[in-house]
Image (cartoon, rainbow, N blue to C red; front, side):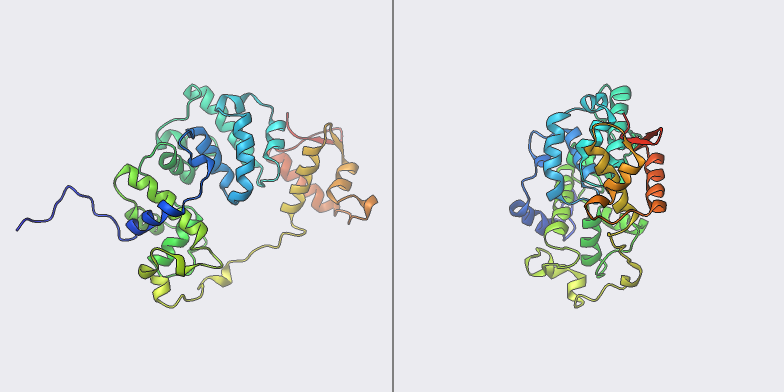
Amino acid sequence: MSGPRHDVPVLHPLVPPVLDWFDGAARDLPWRAPDRTPWGVLVSEVMLQQTPVVRVEPVWRRWMARWPTPADLAEESTAEVLRAWDRLGYPRRALRLQQCARAVVEDHGGELPRTEAELLALPGIGTYTAAAVMAFAYGRRAVVVDTNVRRVLSRTLAGEALPPPSLSRAELRDAGAVVPDDDAQASRWNAAVMELGALVCTARSPRCDACPVAAQCAWRLAGRPADALAHVRRRQPWHGTDRQVRGRIMAALRAADHPVPDDVLADLVAGGTARGGTPVDDTQLHRCLAGLLDDGLVEVADGHHRLPR
């Protein structure tokens, strides 16, 4: 009797059913298209951070039509880049993306580098984004761990409703143990498990009846216990926060074709006191403006504010 074959890699039990599910469930997203470029993949990954696909897709399409290469974005004015970012939120991502484009042009001849170490050396590119580009742009094995992946693995492997607030080394180790050794399978697994978390194994309303690995899921088999860390997951309300005020400031400056005086900006941010809006607290407004100045998102001269040139 022949022994086991050692030339065939053994896949983790989660992998085959998730890949089979992905074959029929994968969304038709433009950054997954056969004609996608590495730059387009990187842009999508930056935009998708803390932002849902439904908001990102139209902005990504417009962005890539306007700036299809790093050189195109590198040459644009920062003000236009921030206007094109529109209401995606966290506009520092737009600044970092342009800084990244300029570094790619200056240091890599306009071509996105093909190694994880070189990607990590680019402005604004962290561990997750570098791994995602390696997997989805270059089809290489990488350990891609976003919120969706963490949630799927937390439930299926650890039996926990949600992962801890911060990514741990143990999570990275466990995630890496599931990723197939083969480049093509690894790349597809990363996309598939992310998709499973986005469409089925969601945070608030998981559809266990539609899950391809429900029979293996430790959390489901344990009776879907409640989140043990719910008491430490505090969600800040949106209304009245500094983030909301910062967003209103940026929206007002994006819409303006000239520098905006302090008093006019305060009125615009408040929704227009002349139209019955609530005046913005001066302390909060100035605090938010100072933060935007520090972040390089706003310039000021003689009491007038504008987007950076």
